[in-house]
Image (cartoon, rainbow, N blue to C red; front, side, top):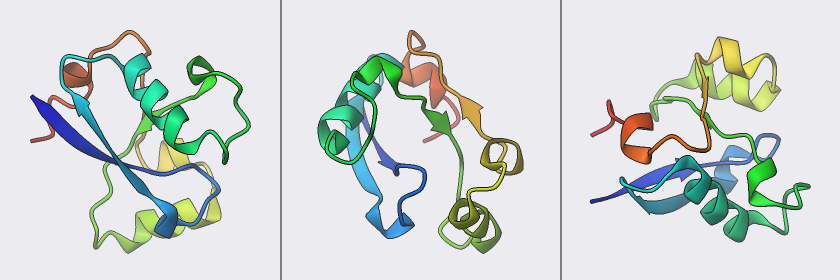
Length: 98
């Protein structure tokens, strides 16, 4: 089964967000590789494994969380973000998504 994740690079405008389709049986490292391929010209990391991915739930009407992202201030705690482990499966990371 595939899911579509909406992603963005911290520091970029939220309007530059992009979608990635990935199988739920894949790992977070596989997701890093997909993101790296899409954004390699826009990021400073040399390898997909260097990317730090965070899962953050932000509704399209959640202006407070969007404001935090624009200001880039303590985003992980204020947005209740969870850093993703490279060897964790996508299905486990997004078990509540659906």
